[in-house]
Image (cartoon, rainbow, N blue to C red; front, side, top):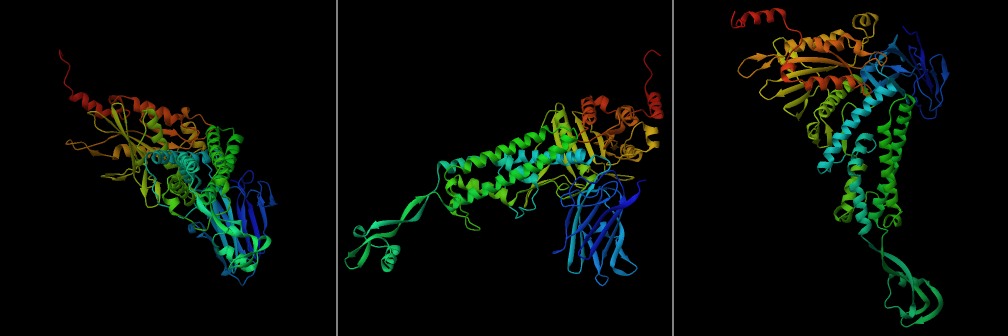
Length: 606
């Protein structure tokens, strides 16, 4: 067991915070965020794996882990001032309590459980407030490779679904004023889906710009003037103008040249100013996103992981930025450099061809069309829920690849008042149906079955329907758990999912029953597997649970974004079986087979 040490010290104004817990190798990798009370300079010390050292702005914080107990001490150095600590998830700090009735001192444990990501704490003492953000990393998978790929893979799948939908239908104009809170994924989804349309709209505006009449001052000869506008009359009254003095009939002395207003056509319109400003904002946002993606790319490269997909994304985004920048260097946008009035809109933007399309798309980008995936929308993720959801999406993608088909995006996304949302949520049923050859496959998420012994609720169900065959069911349970104890390895050969998670599959196969037309109840489940995050150093094919998939029909499959080959192989095998073979639930029941033999008619001639 790792020894407990002081991992973090923060003192700002009269607030002091200490965090103790098990020491692990090295400090964290994400910069610690400390926001001290106004006018105070925080003194921060962070444990680097060997000792507590002074911290400087931009340096990482302590390395914290999921499912680990840490001890917080929070104190106000002014004993007369009470102190309190809060968190978005108040259950995290529920056990941090006053000590001995001292309102200025709080002590207690914190366990982040399965929550990983950024975790913000707020400490208040009187008028002073201290905020600090620490990062919690998973322990069962590598944080900066597998975990970030897990999030990226979910986002990519969401991106793809929304992209296909947006390509095929008109985007709803429902907007939410949440520019600062929108996720990068949803913004990029709209950008990628509609950039060509935006570029075409700008091209139309360039070819057919709407001009305005702008007032311009010109000097005209006083003896040639026909009538006087307001500017000319004021110039006469004040003796302004150019040249020598003249005597004008019925007017009196005037300058030889008088200023006056004239109307000329101009491209410097508020419409062009608004379009230019929004385009410049989009380019700035793209560059900010690219900088973040490049940081992820460097992390993957340092870990020796493939970053080809990220390279393609960077190239696409840089292309978008270059095309928009080039547009803004040409008329009419190059002439409209001043900002538009605050809150500007016009009938031209709303109704003119080209303008209305650019306005609609830029409004979607500016105000944020919500394209979210629920579990990945917050800065703290319940990693077991994230893993479970990702497993379902990965199974859907693998099945579609195996049977060479695509899904209707609307089976997994829905249109609501706040735009497009992914239907997949923990505890909520979802289903995708695909057709491949002579069979129909339905992949269900959070499907529940009522049975005589209680409700059964596997994570992922694959229903296989062949022509003139009853339904055949495969079950996959996603478990973010890994047993690497010596006893487990001695029993199974390598680290793997806990045996109780595997045994649940046997219960499903026995307990789940459905109506078989007029023949009463029957058991449809024939095979099942636990999906789990593997130990990268182990060869799982030597594990008994991998062999059990063929022999018993029940076993386990390692699955992470970096380890999908076992799932692909197993799905390709079972979905390729003829129904006669797939229907076999594993080893036969000895007595039942004997009974069948006794009931069979004897061979002819005996």
